[in-house]
Image (tube, rainbow, N blue to C red; front, side, top):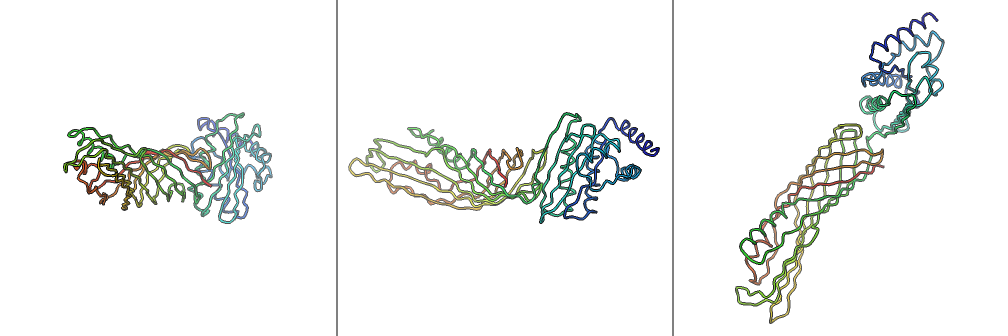
Length: 391
């Protein structure tokens, strides 16, 4: 008992000297289907991570063993709340960490509880499932657990439970919707503005694009994520121009001339993201990848000379190039399964060499370069909001 009293005084003095940090002890994790020495090693690493978190004074294993040996108390196999409270009272600490680690196949599962020794109340639970090598848990899982446990307020009547699944090897589906600023539309509208400055009547500008993306997501680990997806971008409205009672240079009089066209992009891509944790569950990510960007140009033409029947024509043209995709964004994990995101992604590519055919009629030849350019620039910037659902 004298030795117990000496150790108790030592521990109490240590608490005061450490600026009122919470004094805790960590029991060795109970091992299921893994080696006992591996569980002890991970428990020691957890003690270090908790100390580094800056909120706790962590009692060392050797000092715990000395005190418990004096009382004839065995620490191994103690995973219940009642047992942890009893040990915590013997060690004269405020809180205890107890739990277990097990393996099924190649999936490791850690379950830990932070216990108030005075009241026996659970202050926090952390449940992590990890798919990978056991050694990688040192850098992937234990720092996250220590961060979770250290965020509990030092109040006996507060209890928070957090369950978090590690992100290694999990698949998900990502959906994004947003606005596209396209160099193609910008070029067309600049040409229209130049045309309007010289000719009458004025032509309306082309509308910009909206974008919808669907992708399969693979979170390889905490830092790297791979995406395989399809993005569709289309104009909100088709562009149309109509003129009545027009006399062409050839002398032909037209009751009506119509031009109607639209554009759409189909982008098939594969890219990779590097994630940087800014705050808990809130990441900045940067990415790059390659894709195939297909442009579909839909053109409708109608001429109605006053002495002949009308001659409507409709043609579709498809152009394909290889494109580079860059991106930067933020994502926030709402839960284990749902993440929300905000993203900016430029798509950089060569120009399309067009084959759009201007009608053989010589009507409105000044209009040719506006509606039928020889090249079209498919470079674009996409601003999107979306979310990812993980299975």
